[in-house]
Amino acid sequence: MKKDISNLLMNLFGPVSKEIGQDIKKRYITSRNERILNNSKKKIKNLKDNKSANPRVVCEILMNESPVIDEVCIEYFGGILASSRTNDGNNDDVINFVSLVKTMSSKQLRLHYYIYNYLNEWLSSNNISVNVAQGKEMESIPVIFATHELTDKFNININTDLNVLCRQGLIQSYSVSRIKNNNKYTPYAIVHPTTFGVLLYSCALNRFHDYLNFNKECFGSSDELQLPYYFSDNLDKLISMTNEDNYLHVNNTANEEFQLARPDLGKVIRILPKTQEAFTGKINGMVNIYGICEKGKGGDSYNANVYYINEKYDFNLILHLLNGNSTTFTCKNIISEIDNLCDKFGYILDQKWFDLAVKTYPDEIEKVLKFIKSCDESKKYIY
Image 1: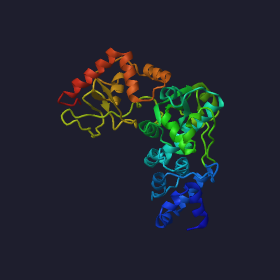
Image 2: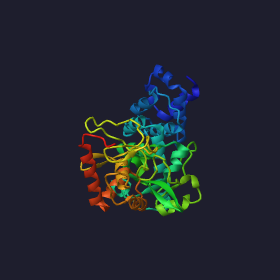
Image 3: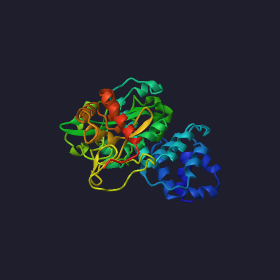
Image 4: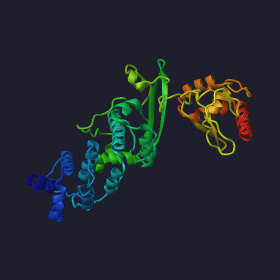
């Protein structure tokens, strides 16, 4: 074993390094583990403090044979190792965080790191009085950020990765929306932190044992991780920050994540009444059972479904009927008005659009849905 690595193990882990057999020590000498050990070393103020790492934590991290490539994984494992050091080495409080980090992707860890790095700096620099040990106090604090920066620069899948953080208890809740600004739309997310999220971040910085100072002292950040810029505690501030960066805005395009809260008036899925399978025939001039003329396949709009009283409806079909495109059904055109309301409220989901339409025009929507059901019960197509 290299002498410098052996000494590093002794300084970091104390007597634990002697308790671990020579055969196991050999397995520690990998590029992956050297990076973790050196990261842990940087986070310890005094390597000669005679503290010992917890054997369970050491083995769980260093015996993990999976390769670690992303620097954020090194940051978290290195911090957890450093946080496991106590006077007697018997405290295994951080063992839960080892398992948690193993279950998360590097992008999810980055998103967690970005949220709590900003929160730590904002709270400490503004002398915000909050008891980080009280979950309800933490959950009342909003962290707002421009989602396009994280998507474009850091390849983070906002909806999926936020969902995982929420499922793991690292954030209490989140919402994704957009706001109209100078005739453009700025996508953003609002998350509400948790005490558990603070604990994991503190552990990654070797501040687990004084995490209560999270709102009083800036814990610092890694030199290896590039940080995003567009984070704020206030939506107006965020919009002001993003005004000059056009790539943070989106127009009304078919961008799946940030489009209008409904499909374009394109394809209509024809449903065979008995089999409920999509009819794929392409017959020019054919009029389907809803009285809508099918000329080829129509536009390139994505298909969507919405739900009303536990029943599923083809959203594209509803839009065509509301637009008066049926030869056998007419209804007041309410699409533009609901679009405007969705822009006002920041809605970007199909179901939100439909729910708003039901609330605003209940009689008209009910009429459309009854017409669809009556057509589905028919036995023939209209030509």
